[in-house]
Amino acid sequence: MDDKHGLPAAFEADLAPGDDRHIVDRLIEERAERLRENPVLWPIVRAVFYPLLGYRKAVALADRMAGMDGREAMDFAEGFLDMSVETRGLSAVPERGACVVTANHPGGIADGIAVWEALKARRPDAVFFANRDAIRVCEGLADFVIPVEWRDPGKSREKTRETLKQSVAAFREERCVVIFPAGRMAQWNWARRGLVEQAWLPTAVSLARKFDAPVVPLGITQRMSAMFYGLGQLHEELKHMTVFHELLAKRGAHYRLSFGEALAAADLAPDDAAATDALRVASERLAWGR
Image (cartoon, rainbow, N blue to C red; front, top):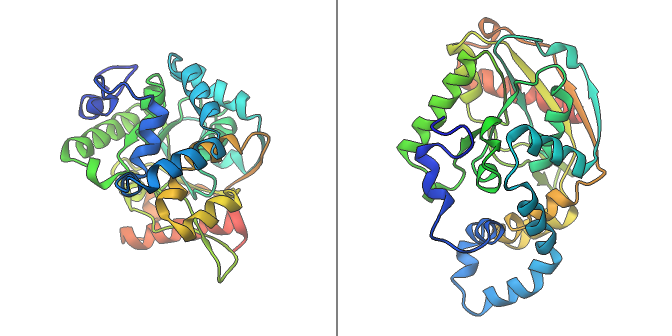
């Protein structure tokens, strides 16, 4: 990293030093670009949805975490959420050496906190592929986060190179790398009345092969609120605006984390797409029994 406590150079513009809006406002508004273009609808959305989504609580939480270092922020988030995390098969995660944990993504930001709570005693060196917005809220999280750009307009070759650079560094440091290969939260399938992972990217498989690192599939059993899935039927941006509400709603939640057996890189299917799909199926089976 260019700065131990901050965004790498390629992501520095995301800090928007000349933007006096609160980081919570910026993150919400970035998720509502089309809604903001409607001068009639946007004021109504702000007036109705901001209080409903716990805006003031989100601002207070972000302000409290802003100056923390990485470990302090992770432990604070764990204590703040006070979730009950049930862990199965944790012994499958190697105690040392580079490894990859691939997980489904049903519960939003809290998924990462739950995985940290489960791993921290065994692998305190764990690092997470995560939305670069985490570091925009708390720069100290750069110690634990390999930032990934989620917005298509914000993607660039420089950011992709920086993500790869940090990935290589993590493997060379023999860290435990946690990846949510879908990059987005699982979707509710109304026909099946259950969650379905979005398409997984082959990044985890590619990195495991490159560094000959074992892969441990992880199934996370959790879900978002009914409001989240309901809003998704009305307007995709309304759904994404609930990011902080969904995090706050996880206070006291019960998580079940089920780790599968570690797979040597050499034992993965030769084709990256096939290997990635097999890992996705394994995570879904561990999480939901199907």
